[in-house]
Image 1 (cartoon, rainbow, N blue to C red):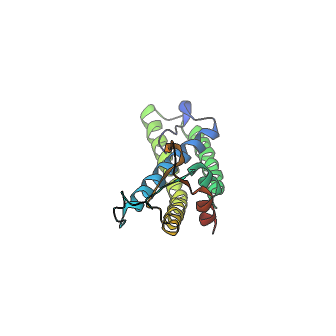
Image 2 (image 1 turned 90 degrees about the vertical axis):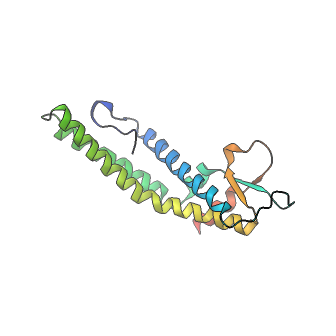
Image 3 (image 1 turned 45 degrees about the vertical axis):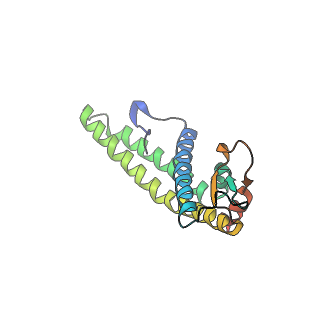
Length: 162
């Protein structure tokens, strides 16, 4: 996970880890959903039924089963790896410390990907399902809507929980 550091540069506030994880996940889901809505969708730019839907990704992420458990597991793993670094690094020179830090960060990133990939896929499928059911060819994050559009957040939450 980019930004996580052990030793003197440790992110002490576990809440920051959650925020970073959410931003990465939301960015990936948004891209996947955005690309998925255009795949095989005819051009309906002038049609009256062409609508833009929007989703509050933070709410969907929080409602998705498994998200909280994944966050807890990642915080615990980060704490374990931090402790491991603190125990193993004192006798090491700077190069060896850097290598150890890199290995531990890679282990954390790998586990994050293993835990978050199924969640990302589940949310992406729910967004695609709701878009198809509602006949809405484009869905964007709620934060980018200034005016208009159809809020699909509740529908996506229902679909992601199903």
